Image 1 (cartoon, rainbow, N blue to C red):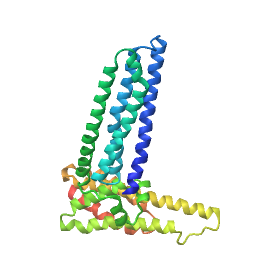
Image 2: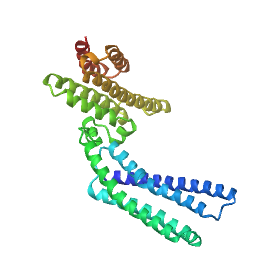
Image 3: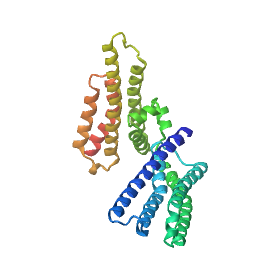
Image 4: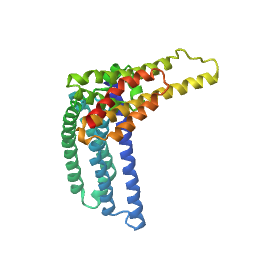
Length: 306
């Protein structure tokens, strides 16, 4: 979990940098507009600058927590209380830095116009708002993640163990979502004893493809003597990776059809999906075995849809 927290923290810093850059661009535009209009030293200009800072302030909890949520949903990782507190203080700290810079640069300008009380009241109100927002929104996110992650979707670590595929590979091949969906659908459909062997066959088909990829990556049976041989080995690894992804996406589509009522299924679409799967594994190592594991899903669809 520590690695994920570090990854999120890095993305949060990037997002915070982006927010500050956007604020700087807005202020440049404000300064240009008022300087061009010969209103550089006016309260109106300073109010516009404050508005820009306030816009950035309001974006901090929203945007930083959006980064947190996206990463945790992707990796199926919840937020515990310690992490929530850390994130809450992070939001408050970033907001305080922004307000402190604003105060240092512009409080004196408001004093010249006799509007110091207004500046202090507005800044105090913003400090109260960010304190409350950080508490409220981090609690909300923690509960949202709890609800989302309890919907039966396997975390990447479990998918990695189930299919013998490293988590970085799951991410690089964009397999987390389709494999989570496949396993969710298989769990639903396997409530009946009849479908259980079919579900096991689907999972076995994916594992067979992964075993082929792992063998290629280990270099078993390959020659690396010439540049051409090394290039061909890399090509075969890429193709094996693509077959796994294509299989997962097409199996997911078959299962989505199977989850629908028979009258809602599209037999023509189902046929096209099956033909794509057959084409993918035509002439491939263990291709016939893989197809034999997947075909029962197609056969069920054909029988039940007619």
